[in-house]
Image (cartoon, rainbow, N blue to C red):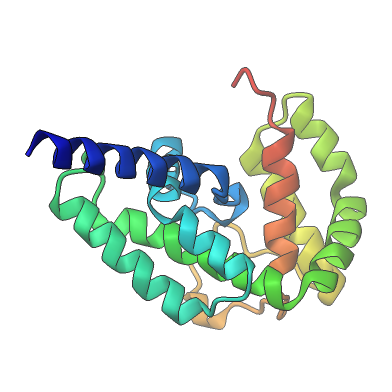
Length: 190
């Protein structure tokens, strides 16, 4: 019996080493705005294999079904340090979706990296210098919308029903690139 438990322990150790060797990270810009760093780390540890497979071409639906099962089992078994299914599944869904989109449109992401970076370079430098991230993100979003429709004006603080707002259509990649650059610019001591 002891020999079998030692074999199981060795197999578990080998499995954890092999998954961390090829572990994929959750892109910080894909995480929901209310996600904590700890929740992101837990989700990443649970679904890094699915992220790696999506990066290699696995479809979103299959990867998300696997991630949901893994997360549900971890929550039921008390392995999520108190984090619930909904929070971890939201982090997983967003990251898997972004990985799949990046797989399908890699050239577009590269193009948008260049365009968005040049569009908000001053905001990136301002965040690195201490400007609050939320303020810079609002300005970046406004600039992105204005590129699509120069007459766009944000209705900040208005009591208008969201259905009546005039918001131009913009590909979400532009917003994710803006979040990425601004989040990376936040000084590490914060």
